[in-house]
Image (cartoon, rainbow, N blue to C red; front, side):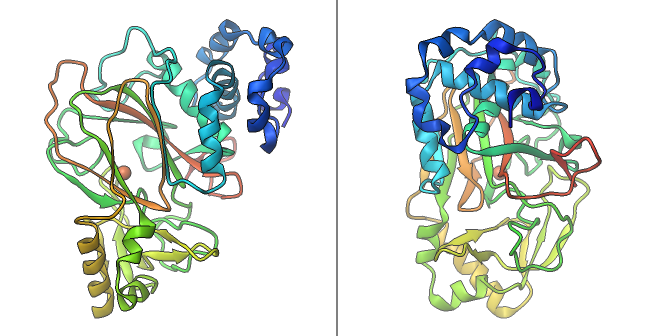
Length: 359
Ligand SMILES: [Fe+2]
């Protein structure tokens, strides 16, 4: 795609520096010509994105963010290549030294921040997704189709089992487990048609209270299961309800929890709170999976620091969060999160002109 096709209009300085026109662009980032780097006009780029809501022009934000990261932190992007090669289920970019939004805005206790207050966080997120060879999407039944979510304590959500609740432990899950994962997903009773996000991509705004992002690659967990339990999880014999952040609650029926990825591995779905087996073998398989997740191999507890970015492969890893107590001092733990999917994964746009907001 040429820059002018993505909504940049006439910004020749920006266009000249654009680093990600092809899949091969990750390789030569460090060898960008000086002429190209000089042509990069960050002030113009920031002025441009601040004039457009990210939900209305996500492609523009992705292009702008990709240029921002390429010029500000090209070395950090080397790590993204591992994700693109499917060799990593998570990525933690820390100590980048990138600018953060100043002043750091207060935690959005009402549940939705002003995107204008977190321009840099959003720009980095959208840019990272672009470098992953992916695109940002959202769902109409979460946050009314907002293109990003504020993962932060919300007033009144004390016992909500979602990323905006805090008093309850979020048990092991994958996001949007009640949705299909891929075109070859064998489930038949999906309550929603658009695929679950492949990646969850976070940028940390406030990092206290220190509650780690906890995840475990699915491969080691599955390897611990007895063959009969693994086989049971491959059968379309599970019902899954949508999470509390997606309302009203929906029920998908007759889904497998494990899917072959076509390469000898598995994609996974799980919502420990909202998942039930329809048969005895399914219930036994689910119980075995929950047991394996009690002390799982390869557990990662990612300590979060302001400015960090984290990518999690939602089809290849389970994640959870401990309960915690906010300080209500305006600087409580706050992660900005976007969902991302590979370009080849298709969803059902809510309407024409809003191709990134899926039903
Ligand atoms: Fe989650």
